[in-house]
Length: 142
Length: 110
Image (cartoon, rainbow over all chains, first blue to last red):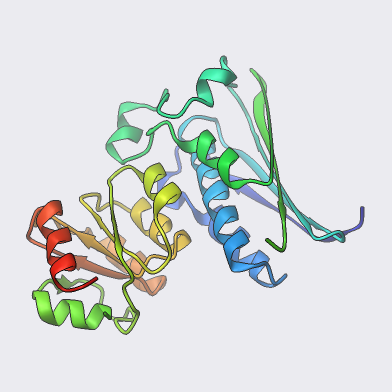
């Protein structure tokens, strides 16, 4: 499938000060493509949660954004490890391994991955000690 | 009601200088857990919280909130205020607890 837009964004480990920057850039990039506002809001929720996970849980990573000719938006969040030992637990609402620091800031509610899955049209997650990858797909029109 | 009307009728302090106070407020959401706010908040709501750090701005902007109301007499740090001004997001400080702050909004018909 031909890509009509392709971008990538880098996310640094423990970079709380810039948390949300990649999500904001994804949002402003997609505005140029004319994405339905309701779909845009779902993408913003998913992108923010996945970006935060890269900052507070993972050792940073890269976000790949593709929009294809068939009107699909693909987001891949690929982090640098250390991986999620128990994916089933990680997908359980309320379950979290967030640090004390993250929790004090209001992160670590254990709602990140469940939120991402709920708002995405397609959701796939793969994890190993080398890193976690989340593959999301959204339709441009709701 | 607009943010400007809320400020006039409550006496709460807007700490951002240039952000747009003509925006409408449609309802409110109260929580300090950012994932709950991302998951449940709705566009144009006022977000009532006691969190005042930099990440509040990203959540509020991505969630398209009308404004953020910091309760309990807490204060936003300078760097947070300046980030909010960059994003045209109004920050307000209320000296009331979260529950009383929300009650005030309800009394005013938000």
